[in-house]
Image 1: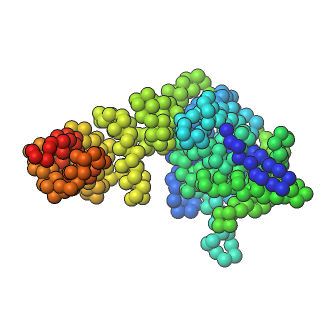
Image 2 (image 1 turned 180 degrees about the vertical axis):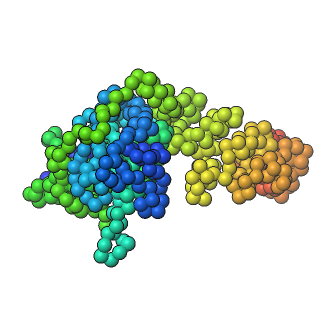
Length: 498
């Protein structure tokens, strides 16, 4: 799919990328305690005795967190493991009260799956089965608890620890090293975020830290074995992830071509300098001394639970896009409308209101999205509801409004929140199809432009658009364009003597 290469002094280099995405599970409580998970709370106000690792406190798995992980696995057609186990990942850091993290190394809850991506702008609905698409393997999804947060800017000589995030449930979604460019990596991350938001298992908010990525990058000459990889931790935007791939790959090529070796290490990304820098040497699994958590029994999922999870899945992006295209919507529009779950829900509400699919898609992707971009609003906070939009489009369909008048009405709706019919009534913006009134205006336009009338009748057919424009202008855009065209053809076709 990708022909991305880095040109070095010794020739071309391929880039190999794998992502470990940490997605915060949508749940009101933490993975092993009943403490709240709301974002933005005062430091250390959402910490239970379990989260703080008080002696004698035992973890109890949160059923909803397990359910969300299973549903996510099903959404990417992954293997769901009926038997899985929690392990202790041992390391000592100030934001980890237990001295270990409860994770799943050896027996994850979700096994191999896949996510289809596409970069083909001419064929935006391409999948791995069609030209322009690529299937990215997902190695596993395991459930683990998050650590707390160190705060270094509260005191000149001391650091503080906020344990509100300690124990929050995360899904670690590990891709295979199938990504080969910054663009592919960005497309994969956007598609994964879209799926998570459709499923409802993670809100995908990277700015708030509920989704972040560790970016594994290596380079090699075409045909060679995989090179040594580095891991850039906790990257919190799609744009930054793509920048990490590009900059880290270039850095590695420079090191190798200078005769050096790539160190297996953990790195951080500095967005201000657009560069990665070394943080520490990269540990292997044995460095963490993993072993089964003795306080937790293995997870055993029965068929009834799995059936419940599968039945709760919504229509997913690829299926929704195919449904839209079957309604006659273009592939590009279908892709735009299904990229975010909120937009798809909004559009479905428009269809449910009886608007024809093509008209709904054209208006939503042009007028609505244009207005939202212009005003800096997202579709969830749109000043115009689907019901109001359906009313507006209905007035276009029945001839009450022309396209230009509809734009004026829509602008007023955005400002006031009023319905389309009320705006039309209050502002006197109703379209007219009165042929008598239109004929009178056309006669005035022709009289004022006798020379152009003669030129038109002499063969300059392109002047027809001039007369349409002048007529519409004279009538304040309220004339029915179809009637204007029909009347003009008749009147301009008459002889000068008549």
